[in-house]
Length: 343
Image 1: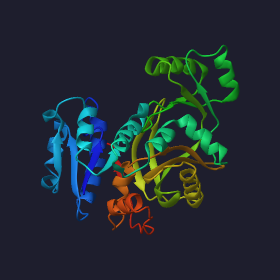
Image 2: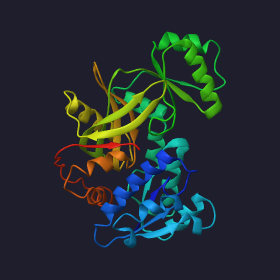
Image 3: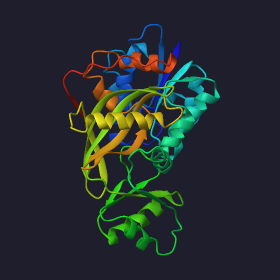
């Protein structure tokens, strides 16, 4: 059986961005390394020449069927679709921004390929932060107070927002990944400037205003299949907070008095979304009143890279079991701690 493992940045889906390329390749490298140890699988991927120097350093490189994007024809999407024809199963690692991940998974589903992850419908849902918050709130799960704004803005919008959301507040795009575009607003002048900035970036696309939850940023890693959830670890997220939030890394595991509550809430969040499957992350803030859900990430993330360093099992084998056989693996035994730093 041939498995296509597609990581968007490593495949050249976006113009060179140093941090994103390194981050993307670190995820791809971890997943490829693990999948290469599963007997009976042929592993293929698509790579851009800019990661060639990184790829030649890995010990499994000669065993992977590599399609170099510079040698192919057509757009990055056409090259991806061409490689889909040659595989039986696909694992997609791509940001949710502008529906990108859902589009890639939808293309695989359209060709009848088995996806090692969530359905396109589920990915589209959790990729829309407004719809995710609405769904989780309807299930009684803790989420921040949220409002959606769309240009052109209604009359007196600023007054209404300031009355509904005390400073500081948060502005963020409806879709996005890695904290990109998330702004902490501390005064009305900055609010007006930030809203104008969003208009220039997103045009008519909606964006969110949320209450600011003070606390510690964490995530919960899970395996999910057919409504069943195995929580794997509580992870501390290292976030640089200025006017914008920047993801700087992750430490696994993280001990905290609210740990069990966070795990239980993350499990409930995953169960609330039909079609979630595979490796899933739930971002939360551990605040004064308890954990609050920020978003759900329906894909392999850097948490996978860190988690595999503190367990003795092959996470790809667990992922295969979860998605292909719809059976959850045994709980993980975590030994030690590991910190992944961006850059």
